[in-house]
Image (cartoon, rainbow, N blue to C red; front, top):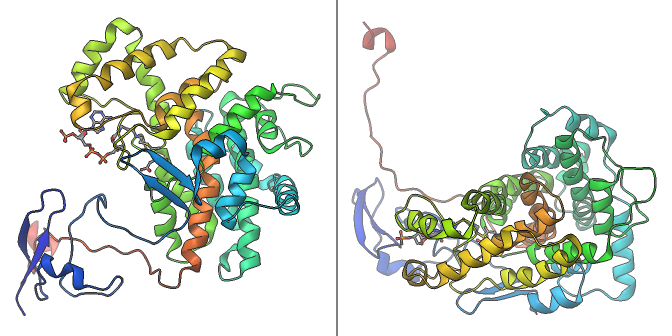
Length: 429
Ligand SMILES: CC(=O)SCCNC(=O)CCNC(=O)[C@H](O)C(C)(C)COP(=O)(O)OP(=O)(O)OC[C@H]1O[C@@H](n2cnc3c(N)ncnc32)[C@H](O)[C@@H]1OP(=O)(O)O
Ligand SMILES: O=C([O-])CC(=O)C(=O)O
């Protein structure tokens, strides 16, 4: 036994020793270590999990170099073209496309669980007038766990299915109500005669007793956006859902943690940040000085860069096309011109080329959301509604995986040791 540990820094490849109580295992021995087997004294320093696979999964495949994304083996381009959001939600959670009977049953179940308990409404009405809708969404999803104590039995398959249906169904209700609250408008109850996405638009924008009839082209565009956001393997929010879910807590609590992770500007919150950035740039003439600021490290080009994609994000390509369909109905968002020019300049600039920084899913989505009349604070809520089936599919896979353990990483301790405590009465004397 020695008192040092060999650690490999995955960013630099450098190995070095740190003092610890247990023995030393060389990084070269890593390959001999069986997954999930504790090796006292061994830790690989990988902040941000750049090279650490935390699970095995058959939900979503990404080839970041080629810009390929597939849900359960189906290319995202084909799903966006020919499927709908509820079918994709089924695919993710069941592993295969539904038959007609299976789809009808799934759609029926989801449609009839869109209402939430009246006390959730009271709970949401209690937020400050200017509460951020993502904060409200995170809290209200967490609150759902108290309304469904049965959800704590995560070992029962039927029970798990029930919670998955409930959450996919209720997320738009919570999201729409967080929007109405910010607008100071009364909440609109779900209209179960409408499709999933049309009902969501109704709860957001309905202003009279009459049935709300959104333009079908807008309904389709939003449905496609939901498809594009539905899953993305081990992104930060899914990792949060899996991490919290690995404690065997109920899925509402696990998904609430996912909403929290998504809220951050480096993840789903980037769509809101992009819009604010474009507004700040204001005109094409200001782009070169903005880019200079990015290159000098003063700020980031929001909506650019990705941990996995070192090529164009395939979703950004589809969103760019979808924007044209939406703008046909709503008129062109004037910020589009700035976004297109920003992309062009960045993609020709050595700084971005060298680092393989391309537009990600968040770069163009906000322009469409704004054309729908959503304020920027709502953008990440829209992402969360789309991502819910993915979070749940990953949670389901996690709780069924017999080899999955509680998520509990190691650390490299860098603090003091074995100090002698001196009571305050002596220290302050
Ligand atoms: C749905 C989503 O979550 S998609 C991502 C949404 N987030 C954003 O759009 C925020 C802007 N982008 C980023 O902050 C990052 O690219 C992330 C968080 C997405 C990925 O981060 P990481 O994989 O850790 O990459 P990392 O931060 O190491 O970046 C590598 C290099 O590119 C630079 N870089 C990365 N993204 C950007 C950016 N958007 N603008 C300017 N420089 C960037 C980094 O400064 C770093 O440069 P260096 O090598 O000189 O230090
Ligand atoms: O995969 C990631 O790191 C982020 C992302 O694009 C997503 O969650 O959709």
